[in-house]
Length: 153
Image 1 (cartoon, rainbow, N blue to C red):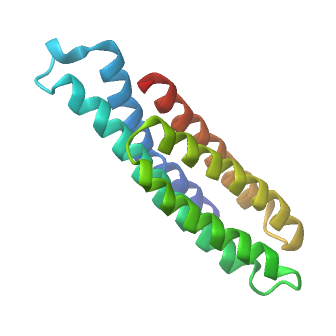
Image 2 (tube, one colour):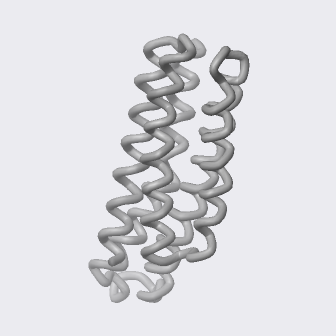
């Protein structure tokens, strides 16, 4: 298996926990408690917890990879600082953990990360397939987090 296929496969699998959290949010909104024995409030709370914690871990990982990519470029100072501040901000979002405000702040952090990612790709020369795969990952994570937040509202 080539490096390109391996990375694409890993990035696809990295979104699966958010898909499971979306399933729990849909379970909550459709009130499927009568079909299964999982309680109504349990599924709503768990969808927020899964989505928030996994979204924060995934964003921190992406920021760490971004720091590793731009560290050797000539204008890396501000980009590295922005990635680091974003990682700290993501973990501060756990102050309002498993609620609407925390999820909205996490989505906002993902949007900031996407902006920094586009700016930092001008500094480094990554392969086009890698940039496109990372953009797809960012879009899918932002959409999944937004859907979970809207459904649980």
